[in-house]
Amino acid sequence: MTARLSDLLRPGEFLVAYDYGQGGLWGVLIAPSATAITTRYPELAVVETLPPWMTPADLEHWRETPLWLDDEPPQGLLKAVLAARDRT
Image (cartoon, rainbow, N blue to C red; front, side, top):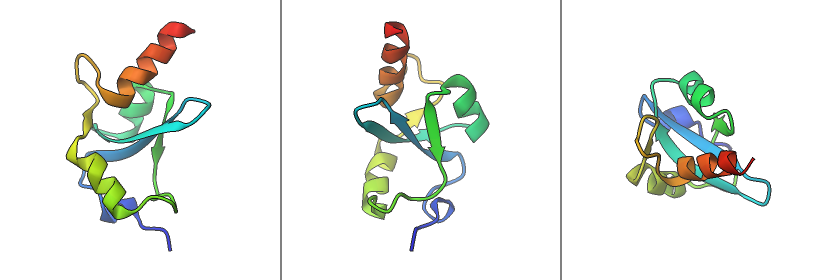
């Protein structure tokens, strides 16, 4: 059975994935809404269910070091997204 993220995340926390072609990066992003995330970072997928391979412990690991939508400069996978944008 797939765990519901709404049971594992607090309001304002979103599980996001960045598929860069040869793999993916995952993280928990703090933002006002999923729309705010995809507006600023259309490369990100906002994930609504815990993937079968991901455990609640994996999710908790990312929650310990969350990303923030408005961080300047962007950190973690957000930095990777912007670096990929600069290469195109």
